[in-house]
Image 1 (tube, helix red, strand yellow):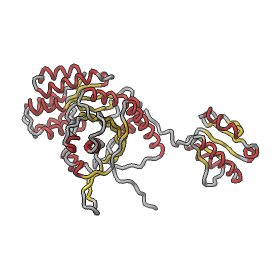
Image 2 (cartoon, rainbow, N blue to C red):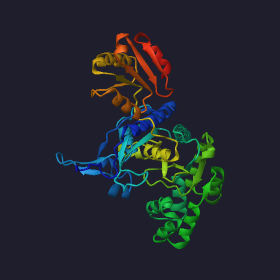
Image 3 (cartoon, helix red, strand yellow):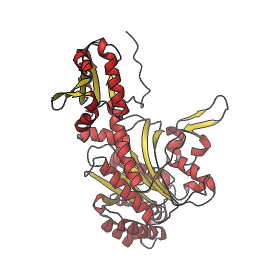
Image 4 (spheres, rainbow, N blue to C red):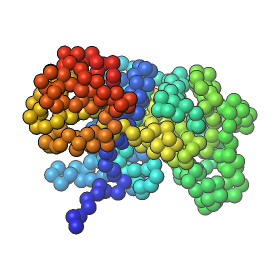
Length: 433
């Protein structure tokens, strides 16, 4: 028995039916990005370790980033963890670029996580970012873009956009509650969906006094319509400068959001990455429970780490892997399309192959996706293979068709069969496909 070779854990092969679906969905996202005036950018899969170091937080850098030493140069490299830090590096060396700079990027990233449903070690991120605007309208545009993008993928309903602001967290948790190690506390809160409120309370109790823990639990249970939650926050903490700045920014932003019914303010949303400085958001599906399908926020200090110049920025990412997993589970997507092929040439007898070959060339030169058997198979074998791929049109070629310079077209959807002169084949197929 031959040994079965598999990719490493957390990595996957994608057969044609999955790739066709993926490319279709990515094309829909690109159309939305372009509609909002974003242009494409690409960055390398590999970065110097020093580029990524100090940007993501202790857990990511100690456990999740794929880091390695090049044996030839003895330099430390890493696979990119996201698409945002490489963007900041790019901007730092292109400071003459027109601002605000709006880019989208779709590409793989790598994380050394424990594989599970909706979580892989190699996955694609679909990012859009605005660099150079500190204003709420840039954040509003990102929220509108993400909502339109999620809708374009077939999720018209059944999702919500959770928003918060890092300044609310800093003002309330760090200043009002006097928490000295906020990142540790934020990381515990960030696990709320995974471990539940009781376990969050337990972990917080190991770090903080009981009364502070109960205040935090009350705060992170605050979730609802933006107007109501923000007013409550302003009444309780509005004298705090950071809280007031966040309150004003979020209100201006929300005035420009098109689908406010999709948005909720959720104080349990902290976003684990260290570089966020303002509004943050996540998009979650009500079903299935697969985690967030999109996330992002404002990061005004990140590009400045590389350039030494303050460059405000905001952006978000859509996780196409979770989108696909959720869409297949909900029946929004199917894997029925197994090939891009429009037409299967089926020739009867090897002596008609040359004529069939010329017909295939004619069809391809007119823009049609055509398969022709390359294995000298019998006619019934050619037909069986084509049937398994759900190819819409078969073109049969035998002695009669070659002698009369014609073809026989069979429509697999309607079972219609017609004989067409070769000179008319393009016009006829145009009406069938």
